[in-house]
Amino acid sequence: MAATLKLEIVTPDAKAFSDDVEMVNLTGIDGEMGIYPQHMPVMTQLVAGEVVARKDGASIILAVGDGFVQITGERVAILTDMAVKADDIDEAAAEQALQKAQARLAQKLSDEEAATVQAAIVHASTQIKVKRLTKK
Amino acid sequence: MPSTRDIRRRIKSVKNTAQITKAMQMVAAAKMRKAQQAAVVGRPYAQLLNEIMAEAATRTVGFDHPLLTARPVAKRAVIVVGTDRGLCGGLNSNLFREAAKLDKETTIYITAGRKAAQFIARTKRNLAAEFTYKDTPQFAEARAISKFVQDLFLKGEVDAVDILYPKFVNTLVQQPSLTPFLPIGKLAVTTGTNAPAQELPTASTTDVFDFEPDEETVLGELLPHSLNFKMHQILLETKASEQSARMVAMKNATDNAKQIIKDLTLEYNKLRQANITKELLEITTAQMAVG
Image 1: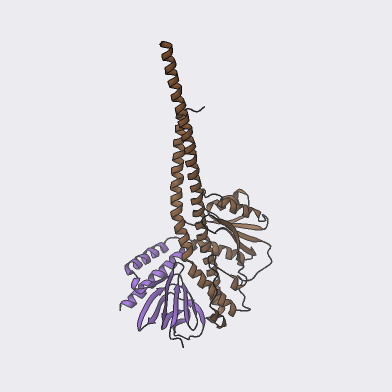
Image 2: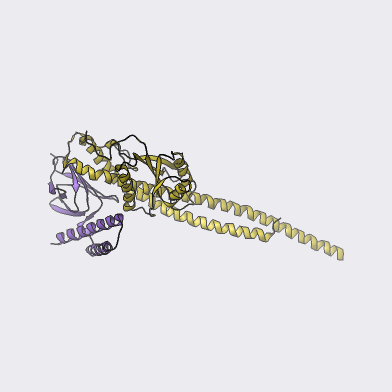
């Protein structure tokens, strides 16, 4: 039995994370999922939030955006538009981005701009949320 | 016969031109590196997206989605992806030559980039919409284009959508290329433009995937997303093509200017010497006359 899962998190800008881990916790569209090796193959949508990977007893926490997850017995592949490690989150910067995005939302925007701003809000608020969770 | 001063003036003007083209070459070279880099970093994503789509395909036999269904093509749309600015060699004209080959009656055009829009308008073709994109193409810009054509397709206004764009082969070669965009057709065929053809992990084909909540919802999100991403990759690639073409064109222009300066300098020196000789002759003749 494979004792580890290969967790891959890929964004359009980079391969954000790629390592063997023992367990992955993530938020799917139907709720939170805990994935261990030999999980049944599943494909689902990922909801913006935190992804927690457990490796050697330590937790690695990442903030991710919306996307897709593909799970096989030995691999978890996450396709998303944002992925930041909790340690790398700059809370002040995220806070600022959030405020800026919300200010823009108050203005009149085209559909496309609104979608971009909405995505920025989701990214920023997720980062802030995850950062606060990890602080405790 | 031009005077030495005329030639001097021409040399100066050519020198100025050479300076400008040289500067543009440098700028294009720097931007080219960035654009190529941007086109490359999307590859792991494209690859994974392909894997997921391909694996989804093995599981979804008999599953149908409006974006997948091919129809008899009565009217089709072509997205012409050009550049905003000129001075990039034959890049746009090659592209437009291909665009002109398409049937005027049954094709409607959607353009990205100002030059493409100008061409379609000038040749009085059916322009459905024009989009712009920045020097570093944003995902939102690609999504706007992609969403627009998906709407056209789903409403039945067009039966197929192709993209015409300058494919980046290498720095010296950009090939105008027409790739199908919609319908997606068989799932497994869908590839991002930059995805290297790598074999998929063999183990996964035997796995049977569960979809949560169900395949319709997941694919309903995944398909438009993959189209948006493909569009984005194409914009990135076009930028890389544009900057490389411009760099090469400007390098040629600089080289030409240098050659002209060399020729003109030679002519100038010849003329100058001829003048000196003439003056000397005049002096000696005058002296002989006096003496």
